[in-house]
Length: 375
Ligand SMILES: [Mn+2]
Image (cartoon, rainbow, N blue to C red):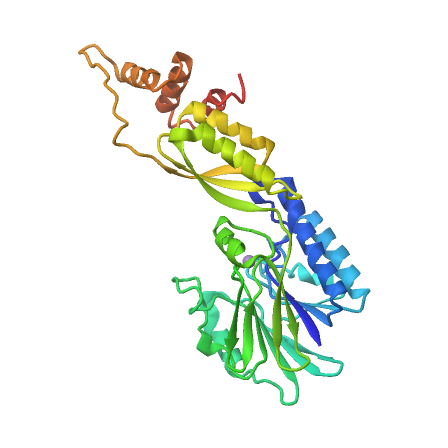
C-alpha cells in the first residue's frame, strides 16, 4: 500500500502581494493531486496548514474543493490534520477543512482511520497544539500505542525540539513521540527531512512551494515536493520533486553593478524555466539611485525581485561639506546630497521627508514622488 505524504500547502497565500504567486500555490497543489492519481496511492496524507489562514479566500476554497473532489472520484482518500495556520482563532468557529469534508476530505482531529488492501494500515492524526497547552498533547501521545498486526502511521503538526531548538518554536521532543510506529508523518517545518526513527521512518514533507525566503537553501539542497510512502513490506520512503517557480538569493557588488546585473540577466535567461523566477538581492557596497534604476532591467527576466539586505561600507562614505556660521541644517543636507549625485529637486524632496518625518501620509507621498511613481 502506498500513501502520498504532503504538507504545508498554504492555499490562499499571496506572496509579495502577487496574484501569480497565489496561482503558483494552487498549481503546485494540483500537481500533487496529479502525482497521487498517477502513483495510484491509497490515500494522500496531509500534515496541516492546508490553508494559509483559518478563513481562506474564496479562490483557495474553490481550488481545494475542486482538487479533493478530483482525487476522491478516483477512490483516493484525502486525510488531513489541522495545522497552526488553519486553526480558527475564534471560539466555536469551524476549521475550513469542514467545508471540504463535503467533497470527501477526512479530518483526523485526534482520531484514526484504518485502510486495508493486502496490508492493514492504521493512521492516527493529532491536531496542532500550541506551546502553552502542549502538556495535553504529551498525555495523548503517552496513551497512543501502535496496533498489533497493522502498519502504523502517526500524523502531527508540531515543532520538535531536536529539529528546531529555538525558544517557543517547539512543543514536543523526539522522546514524546510514541514508539513502534512505521511512519511518523510530520508537518510544520517547511524544509524537508527524512530520517530513521526507531524501526520506522520519520518524514517532514515540508512545504511544496517556497513560502518563506529562509526555505531557499533547503529547496536548493533537497528540492520541494512530496514523499511517496510504501508500506507493503518494510516502510520505504521516496522523495518526489516538483518543478516549481525558481527562487534564488544573489549578492551584488555595487562596484561593477552594471556588469553584475547583466550577468544575472544572462543567468536567468539561461535557466530556461517555464516560469520567471523570483530574486532576493543582497547589495554589497554603496548603493546609488542610478544603480537602483539600472536594477529595473531585471524586470524583463524575473517575476519579482526584492532587496533583502544592504551591506553598506561606511568608511569611504565621508564627503567634505563646508560649514559656515550662517549654514542651516537643511543647506548642509542639500549640499551633502548633491555631492552624492542627487539632483537639487530630489535633494529638496528628501529634505521634505526629513522635516515631515512625523507625518507618515505626507512622507509616503513624497517618497512616491522621488521614485517617480507620481508627479
Ligand atoms: Mn506551515
